[in-house]
Image 1 (tube, rainbow, N blue to C red):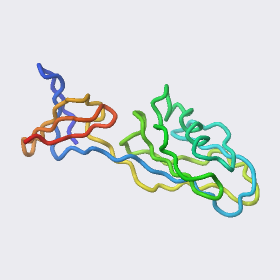
Image 2 (image 1 turned 45 degrees about the vertical axis):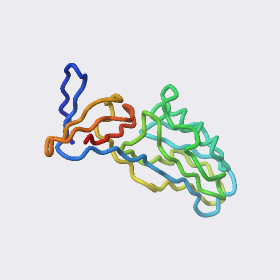
Image 3 (image 1 turned 180 degrees about the vertical axis):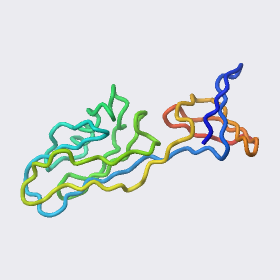
Length: 170
């Protein structure tokens, strides 16, 4: 959607040709398939491999492994605590909701099984549960204005730069 941005006495004013989108966080699930009985694996995200992850990983281990990736973590701005649910592997799938300023409300690639040292004839599978949707003007600060060029309706960002929430004004 439009990326026109104006600066004036009110600060940045954005435009869009349609309704602004608040965005949706990507949700991915890691499940075992077949008969994993032991071992380790690594995941990668946007080309960066994780540390070794145990076949019995729980929510805390998975959050730590993912937050340590520069493409997700990068100075503590990665996954927000509590967004990995389920587990522990291999009995129960781990579900990851991508949040934090680097990864929230964006279209994201799937995690990749980078290294598989699992035994017992099995592997881990990554599946997309909810596709991410890019938010309109993710960089817009709280209080920024957005004008719909097709209707003239004014919207105000009541969220923040990473997670904008565009509220129409009466």
